[in-house]
Amino acid sequence: MQLNQVKRWSAGGQALALLSAVHERHWTTYLTEPRSLDELAKFALLPTDRLRDVLAALEAIGVVQLTDLGVTLAPEYAALLSDDAPFSLDSLLDEAQMMNRLVADAVHGVSSGPDSALTVANAYGLRPSATSRAMFGQLLDALPDFRDALVDGRYLDVGCGVGSFVLSTAQTLAGMRAVGIELVPAVAAEGARRAVALGVADRVDIRCMDARDLEVQDEFDAAFWAQPFFPTDTRPQTLAAIRRALKPGAKLYMQELERLPEAGVERDAFALRRLVFTGWGVPFARSAEDLTAEAKAAGFVLDRVESTPFGRIVVARA
Image (cartoon, rainbow, N blue to C red):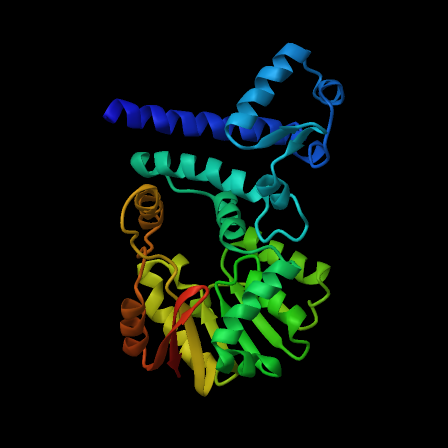
């Protein structure tokens, strides 16, 4: 049984290596339209017999389809190449490679660098697109008080990453003004670049700083804390800074990002993510109840725990 499991893991790694290889050589983009075998052979610079073998393997793992019109990328993978895709194939492959490295680093006690932080931010953050805006719109539909606070208010995004939520929502709500705080310079720089590209930099200020150093008081109408990425020893001071920054009675929103799956492949993946995150000193998979206790200890008052399309959200009043 164990031998079969190792072989399954090995096959999965090989499939990922094959997908990465053809993506690096731009086959995926080329095959968004049906191509004949001769066309693809010229593009790929491979002998026809070798190309047939590669295509057979790609078809077996579901990456391409062979039809009467020729060879084409499977719809699920073609969707990841769309400008409107909330996640890109590039970011998913980068995340897979990064997690392989970080799992091994966890055993060796090696710390990850800023490149990993940017890859993590891209992996967990939706790309700005119509699809992303619609998804975040569903979140705000489930939290109407959050939407009301953002419409013409000032919003604080603590641990904003590359700015997925704050930038997408600023595009939707023209009166929204926001400050995003991000500790890692490379991640903050990418968020600021996106703000300029999306035309919202005049309303969204991405700051590279430690959230604990935020000294403003009674300034913001709502805040979101990306709590899954904050190490244990930073959390009480971060919550204290957020509470100071919020106006009296303003609300803090916190997402329960991870829950222990029942069993199977998802539970295996959960354990591996936990290995990586705990190596960063982060309390992995904090429950809504855990987050409620943290907020109360910092002086917040629980408003409610709301079920949303993004999981359970803890809402606490300053």
